Image (cartoon, rainbow, N blue to C red; front, side):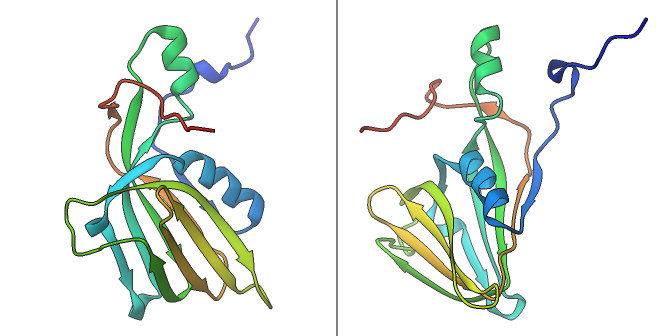
Length: 159
């Protein structure tokens, strides 16, 4: 007699997810919440209509299991890519300061006409990046092995 597979039986594989609608984007936003990155790790390739961030994201998807099993909480480097980008604007960010570390709070979409709109990357400390897009297309891909979260704790927010 065979048993049904359990979630815990799955191997830990790097994330490689895409978002083409608001529901999918909500999932990506929750997985990137509290990701940190230096201001120098943002890149807009206007000719390719692509904006990318190399982020150090907290592994929210693994945190409950890690805490239950007494394992370290983890982060992983990932690339967050927004395609179909027509323009980029930001506020509260000094891109020339290599020591500036930014923290991503959410990724949302403000729809416009005919599928176009704005992808809004909201940062801690009143910073934001607003990407004018022709269509919503965002991907998140882990690019390194997970590593112990330097703080050893899950991120928290003041209410």
